[in-house]
Structure formats: C-alpha cells, structure tokens
Image (cartoon, rainbow, N blue to C red; front, top):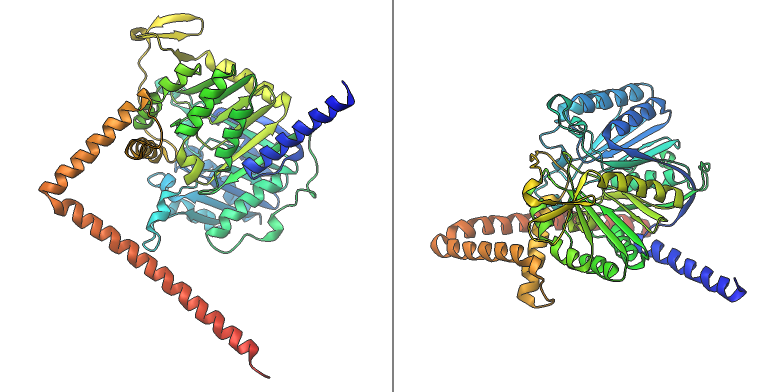
Length: 490
C-alpha cells in the first residue's frame, strides 16, 4: 500500500472514531476484558459469585427487582456484604418494581447498612417525571468486575421448566478493566439526582484501574433526552458496509431509523432484525408488526423468535462492532429512559455475537412478503403451519409508551404533512383516527368527562410548578442574604 493510501485509510479511521465518540457521547476505552453472558441463569450465577467477592463497594441498578427466590437470594447476598462493611448502594425503578417488591423487602438491607433509592416515584410537584424510567440493568463490584445486560432480577427470566416454558432469551456482558470507571460514574450520576451524591472514593479513575485485556469499548449511559444510543444506532446503520444484524425485544421503529435501515439494505447491506414472536406486551408486538412492510420491501430480513420471550437488545455490524445493553429500538429507550449499553470495537467479540445470532435464527421464523407464506431456515411453510405461541404477562420499560409515541408520530405526520406515509402505517393511522373521533363524540355528549380530568391535570401542573418556583425563589433569597453578609464591612 502506498504512503498516500495509508494516510487516507488512517484519516478515514480517525473520522470514524470521532463520529462514534460524538454520536454516542462516550469516549473509547482501551484495555478491557469482556465476556458474553447468555440468558438469566448465567447472569444470576455470575452476579451472586461477584457480590460474594466484594470488599469495598457494590453498585446495583435495575428496572425490575422482584420479591421471589432470585430476588431474595440476591438481596441476602447484598445484606451479607453490607454487614461485612461493604458500601452497598441500590437504585430501583418505582414503576418497574411496582407490584414486584415492596418497601419491606428492602428493610433488612437498609438495617444492615445498605442504601436503597427509588427512581421517579410519584411526586405531585413533578407529575411529568413519571414519563421517564430507569431501565438500566447494571452491577459494579469494586474496581474488579461489572455487568450490564437486559436481564432483570426476577425468576420469570428462568422460565417454568415444570410447565415446559423455556427461559427468556437475553444477553449481557461481564466487564473488567478501565471501563469500570465509566460504569461507576454512570451510577453516580443517577444516584446524585436522587439525593446526596455518592462518596467520591467509590468512583474509580480510568487511568488508575489496571488493564485486563485488549478490548476497546464505549460505555453509553443515557438519560432522558440525551439520545446517545439513538445517534450511535443511526451512525452505525449509515456506516455499515456488509452486515447489520439487530435483536430487539420491543422494536417500534420511528421513520428516520426505519429509513436508515431501508437505505442500508438497498445499498447491499445484509440487514436483519430478530424480534419476539410472542411478546409479553401484545400491543407493542402489534405496532412492531405494523412496521415490517417498509423494511421487507427495502430488503431487510425480519425474523420472529419461536421461544417464550426474546428480551435481548443487541446489534452487530461488519464483524467488527457490536452493542449490548438495555436500550430497545424505540423512542422510550432512545429519548425517555435512563439506559446503559456497551459498544464494543473488537473483531473477536463481534464474531461471537455473529455466531450467537446465527444460532438464534435456528429457532426463528422468517417473515416474507409472499401471501400467507413464511420461511423458516431454508424451507417455506404455510402461515397456518406456524405454531401458536402463548402470550405471557410481565415485561420491561416503556413498551406502552413506545407504542403511544409511534401512534402520535404517525398521526402527527398525517396532520402536518411533514412526510409521506407508507402503507404499513395504515393501522396506527386508523387507530389514531378512531381515537380522535371517539374523543370528539364523548366531548359533545358528555363534555364533563373530558373537562374535569383536564381541569384537574392543569391545576396539578400549575400547583407543582408554583411550588417548585417558590422553593427556587426561597433558595435565591437565601443566597442573596449570604452574599450580602459576605460583602458587609467587618
């Protein structure tokens, strides 16, 4: 290769590095070791074993922590470490844990010296704060090891062997190396929003944590409206040259991302999307299927998982790049929630992800545009032959919100004429039209049915804003008095 060609290649790689860093809002961290964890049993075993080794700190953040055999086993492990003097800090999501575990579940841990905080509980001064959820699933032990995934702390992820219900299909990773500092900072940032900041001595420094391997990666910790994962997903979809294989539990594609995937497929990229065949949230599954046609028409291959529930959120591109974490491909995850993912720039890890993806497709049915025909593997089956799968309760964050956002996006586009609607958007458009007409009829016949809730909501919002404004005013007055005392002559 000539000197000029080498220089051009280096320049392109440098531009890609900058693009990834700016899109994700996260710098590349070198010198890490990463291990792929498949399904909940591997996660739970690794978590319990790592907690038992903790000597200084345990930072746990999860959307669902359930009061069942798995939840109690993990809580008791935390209690034992807290009694041994380890700093144990837990963040749980209020909505995710609603009906899963009550405050009494945490009292033994708090009595042992652990600290537990709740993300976004109902607050009359912040009524809209409940639209955001803490959807992260992460655990960090000292400067030793960290975990992030899509797995919640619930026995439900293990399935029901006695009833022949297989485990949920989920993916996560175990990390060692300097990247642990980024995990600790992500936890500390969320902890700070819920009360007194985390002890700085519990937050490591990237340069101080010893290297554990040769893997380069980025920890992408997003908060509402930061959209780091969305920007990175868009960037990868635009830069993929050969393959882009996606797995997602609650896919509700918005127009810009669907168009990016379609453009990649038309450009010759092998784009694949693996989603649940039987979702724990049927409404979201319906919206997901409504978005198949524009993808299929562009050449994107869509597969539905045949197991009990596919809950993984992963991507792998060109055998060089992969993403694993808690973010789904929908607006709730991209813009509304606290999420955490790892983007790995390593051929060995990407090869593992590709191998796992191909194995998953062996238990999936491909959706094709042929009437009433679907293809599983290399054989074609009539749609009527496809096995019926039971719907199962439970779930993860923001699925109903994602479906509502897709509905609002379609209706908004139709009303404002800001883009051309595709045939696949007929269903959400009809649902939106029916909803609007129903609300119109109700407002004509029973105006109080809409008027009273609207009035109460406006009063609630107004009182909440007034309360927060008064608190800020008192804080400003207090600061002015302090400044006046400091300026007074001695």
